[in-house]
Length: 370
Image 1 (cartoon, helix red, strand yellow):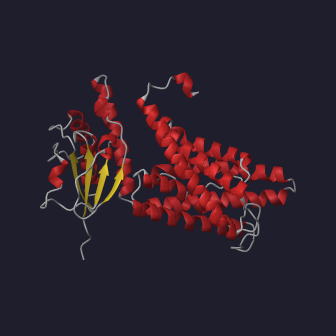
Image 2 (image 1 turned 30 degrees about the vertical axis):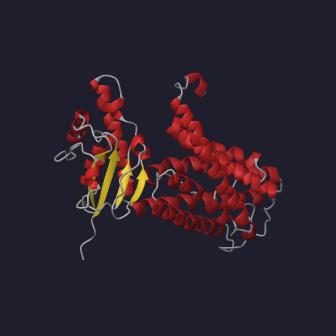
């Protein structure tokens, strides 16, 4: 039985640069499983010559590329779309036509290379950068199993570090503060490593709260977000088993450590709020620094929150299966998870307003970023 071919539509405002690049990339890289199209809400009528030049130089197809209205794909005889991606902020905020078949939608925010003012060399470099970003996103989109494996692996190694370092710390010292420090530093360090090496593959969420936020932002399709969460939870449990096996403990052992009450729930809400705010702010202003920002934030939050900053439902579930230093009673999980999700949603709301306001105002001075 032949495999199904999925139709994918990339939307932008002018359909002359980013959406055209995406159409060409998927046409070549996903030709066995996908059929790609592009369109615009206010098509410019011509494809940007730098888009054509970059695609030709990188050996991607340019035949048939044209700037056209999205209304072409809303007609009764148009191909039925399985996926619709907006690749610029204007198209993401506009009202799209009703697409037959109710396709899955997501938003990939890409800076417009056509807006760059400069020399031809600088403009071409901007188009190359947009091409590389879109190719990375499309590679990830076309290889969901690889992304899920990265999420499961990353969460497993994160939990193994949290649980394992807690066991080691508890073994080596009876000083609770020193044990907490021994648990904190490896956790912050492994986050930097994992986000750096797995981020280009899956986005390095390792956290259902993070996946929820990106699903709400339409950077992750709902079904993919559910798959991410399942992979994260399974990976977290595997991480607990791995840590127990390394220390010759029962592979699963329900925790007896009580972590409940208003103060603890507030602490988890604050921890998750700060984590999401750090991620969104980092992506907006200094994307390359996100691994360090997250690692440093969690390192700090271990010490300023009474809950020691779980900030992660998948990690919380995994830690309920270890009766060691880092554990939490299974009965206490609902309060923690609810607080984490609430904190994440509040952060999304506040940071959405702050970052939108920052985008509307004057450029941030270099000194103000220090």
